[in-house]
Image (cartoon, rainbow, N blue to C red; front, top):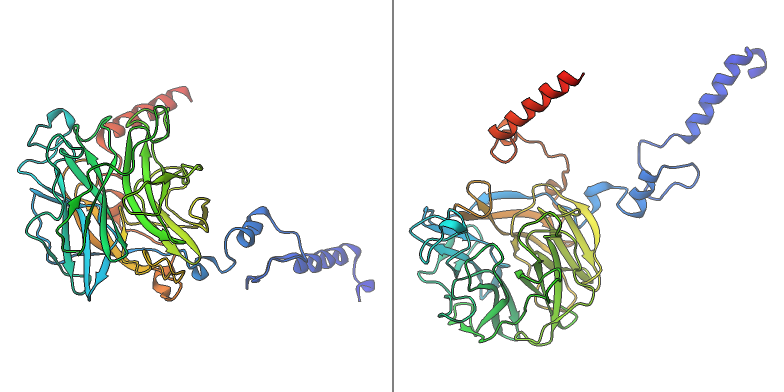
Length: 416
């Protein structure tokens, strides 16, 4: 039919036919196309991600938050860094860093024996229970108190992680003797009990120590996070070589293995096994271990997965993740391969939007990180925020930076 058409028009029509055969379809193929050239970005969609995007990714979720009922708020009370939530005899249990001081933290220079330097200074481990996961009742006294001086941890014990093992309960936590903050040395101690209600007994010696001088974790072992995998106890943690200094990598995470809750714990020869993240949140998933990584590092705000617990790969990018999450993860300590992930947990929120000062509160988060449950509500990936969010303290441009940017703008105008 093209014989009767002008040559130029024939070429245009033929060009259109070729383009029609090569354009990428609107209904995305579930298999990587092989009948047309595709870009590196589309190759990654199939090789690294998922052609159905986050809708079909069991290790993707967004997170929704709710205020808890039953935990009184006060300027003299701070609650932060909850453990995983566990359920025993129909009752939910959680432990957390609890600070009860008459003065609020104002930094290390103003700290005293009774005035905290940071939000987690002069703290003990507290315990609360719930029948429904929404309303909580706090014990009247700490579950685990600081040990007496000069034992390691007499200044503060904080950021606990819970382990259920052979009918007993173990709480791992940071143990500070010097002033909390700065270059304070911090190993991990453990207390144990026959019941989640205690009483708890301090194991006399730290079970995980900072690394040798010059190593990635030679000052502190933070945020111990125990799980059970393939019959082994794995405790993940964040290491710190120094608290400040741009030349140092400040936030990476490692793991140590043990056959007994009291050790010895053997560090992985591959440590650090995760190159990012501020707090630890690892949980059994599928045949391996998943990790929720937030706040710090080049792979922040991701969920990662490892079959062996050491070699992690990014599986999703997440938005507004919970800070210091403690999920209700029924399979965390079973080690039977039936890893169901989680759909809710507790986290903390610092009331001034910072991290080191003022008080923190516990909050609930809900999500869909369970392969056994499908809640499309949590798979949306186009979150938008209101005006208040963009102008809040840590997102809006502060007055000092406003002055600097105005000076920079004037300098650019003068140069041009």
